[in-house]
Image (cartoon, rainbow, N blue to C red):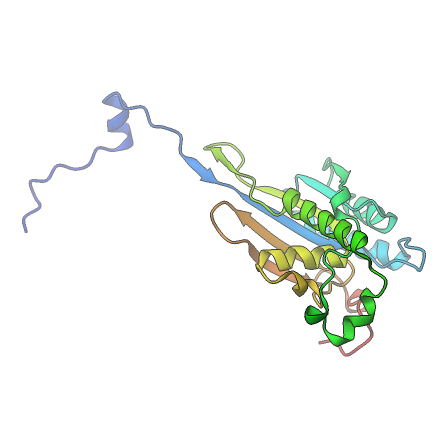
Length: 231
């Protein structure tokens, strides 16, 4: 095949000189969610000294991330954790989000419940279970979605920190995996451990990391978990 006589394709400059105006192209934006359980708290739900240190170290880890917003649960231990870590994120707004409050997102039926969890759900009536499901649905609807598309030369991604509770992180991870509702059981998170999920239009969510504690020294890791052997 002889290709020598083929004319080269016009370059963008050639097209402009020929009167063609390039159209802005659409960019698929990514929503980055940085999920963290609050720091260690006492029996009254107040952040302890250890919890403050954990939250501060998480803030240091996130200091180089272009964070747009910090959202937190209404409960005091999450409020304090959010404001502690936000000291390392100057000018980033810190705002309460009711959907992040601690709650049971889904009460499984008897066939779905592992024997070790059976007693945990004793006393949950249908009204409480329905309220939890509504909150869980609102959590997903507000945060578990892509930010949409934008024209070129505008900011493409969003970065948001969610300071919440173990069950809410478990629910968002379960949702990202498209797992059955009862699979939130057993997805525990340590205090201020970092979980990152990315959302883009037209693609399944990406779980970048789960329960990562590399910003914490060994003596501050694994709080919020039952006692046991740790790797």
